[in-house]
Image (cartoon, rainbow, N blue to C red):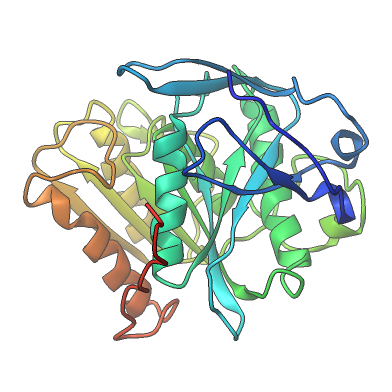
Length: 298
């Protein structure tokens, strides 16, 4: 079990985080005022063994929070992505998986927040958490040197479903405002879905999605041999028919659970396709190169 060490509590509960896996570090930002006042870290999750040897999964989250990974060396306000890991709304994936994508985004000049939403079996709470997360990031954009007009959401599997929900349901509050941070919009400026799950009911769009031409640009990356693939097809079709901007990359093989470690071509090209889309959408500059990692950074 990973033990969180919280210290130097600052505005709205920002604190340093230390974990048993020293390769990853970040800041914890608790989402809700009631949790900021709590000293109980048990509600921030319990680690359990994952599918592969040595991997861990996090569940039993009752105090949701963000882990913040600022892009280094950025003078002007930069874009940011709020990453929602998958796990069937039962757990969220391994430390390696959810933090590697944040570090990869950092390498390309994009700050990242990893959302640890309420689990298990708490879709209502998770949806409130992602709406709150987008509002908080936008409200505190100046503090974090973030461009409030380049706030994106990204999710894998259940996290993809959650990201699509906030992208389509941004104008319908899922909770009553709790403070001034909730005065900001929770509409993301762009959305990235990796092998999203639960997007459909047979051949129909899932009822929780309201699709219009007002939606921000969406990128969908998935594989045709993924058991949830039909949902991506249904969702992409609904976006196109509504006149909402969408781009799709549907690979023939790769199954469910796309990762940065995908080595088989052409699936291994998905990170480059993601970056190209960000450039095409003017979220990052054309020609931006990967930042050189500091010595010793893994």
